[in-house]
Image 1 (tube, rainbow, N blue to C red):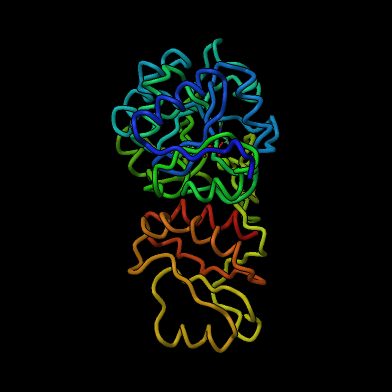
Image 2: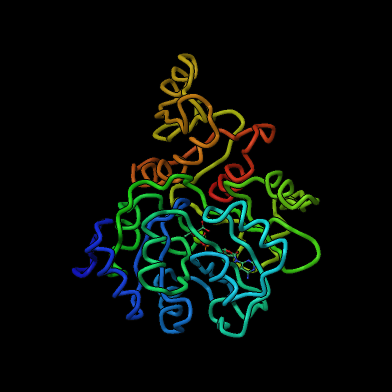
Length: 332
Ligand code: TXA
Ligand code: MG
């Protein structure tokens, strides 16, 4: 751990210090309602480059810029009527909107694209820092590129603690998976990344059809044509597999992850196979599964298992798009 990595909390004195660091061009790992983000001044090219360097992220993968509200968004992008409708319905919250950018936003943030991704987060710590700094804050998830996103300060400390100066501990993230990304930069409204806000909720607010992320037979999505949407992403280092049935007989020293509390016979099968059983929710609630999924993957990845087998959620499970998306990417 780098001597300088300091854990702040959400007390006003701490947030004032972190705001000063951000205004000085430094980076800070901050809690959001989705996952922890690695934040820096979006209009300061040196800070933006530092974000890419710390994450080991390729420059072709654009960053999300966090803003206070719609008025703030208008400083950075050409806000259209659809964006106004969605921002009124879902901001502050876990929805990222892709819009044509204004000239003030540099190519470094957008990977030279003509669009910028904007989000107004609802987490009180992040909101307060947007207010205190007056800045637009670029913030990708606070993980090394391709690794599991962090949903607790301890995850960030473990995976980036030797590369960053400070983390604000705001507790466990409420949603536990990254925001929904909707592209409003062309005629056709399209979801680029499923997340806590579902396609149906977005279509209902807009009063028009929305193109969901499409999957090809190889499990790829159309959005992977866009920069940054890689198939293997959010992955533990331990080999991980999404399975319909657990591999009895081959489970030795592996972890079996059930979607909900397993039955006695399921537990017995795990024990007989030499595996340890874990579960993503007590009752089968999808929101609870999403809240826990990255935390469990972080713990299992440090647990010395030979492999991680995760039960595949049914596509019929309401609200499971984002969970299936993240598990598919983590387990390939
Ligand atoms: O919940 C979240 O969105 C979290 C928190 C910290 O806000 N952030 C997050 O950022 O997930 P990141 O960098 O891990 O994922 C951002 C993704 C990029 O990989 C890229 O695919 C997409 O957003 N993106 C960013 N700008 C875009 C643009 N102009 N057009 C299309 N996609 C874009
Ligand atoms: Mg990320």
